[in-house]
Length: 234
Image: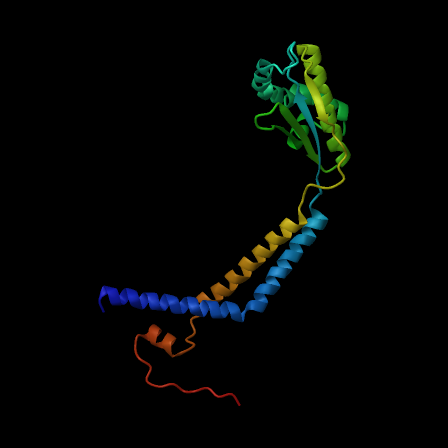
């Protein structure tokens, strides 16, 4: 058998195997569906009872640009604020600011604990800084953000005489948890259950060495089948 015929023979075997695999998967659809539903349900139950809910609180501050004598916004002031954005963010996240926050908020929180809850970002091409804290206690999240904003504003005013920091949105107690997402985890659980059940059925198929029909016997033995004995059920 030349190489071309050999390749065609291998391709035929591959097509037959894939077709057989599809038939086996269809035959075991109940197992696949049951596994998908069960794993999704288990993940949902675990999410609901064992994963702590987290609550976020956010405050927004704005670096107000100066207005010139003609009543127009001073462009140089905007450029100056843009250049200082990263500096302000570093000050907010710095140990000197957060150590005072830890003392004020209490709850045996350390600077490291507060940092792990904190997110400080800047909206692109703006002078807006968003400060957000995410903890397992909605009141604590609000207290952390509120204290950070107050201490940062006071520090900038007293030490650097910066008076253009305005609070746009004040921190609030948010009773709606931001995580975990039961829907997202349920979908992920369903996907895991589906993959595991399909993998189980596929492995069973691959390691099943039984010869189920004439063509499989001929492919395995390499010789033609001379006769078949029909199967009749009583």
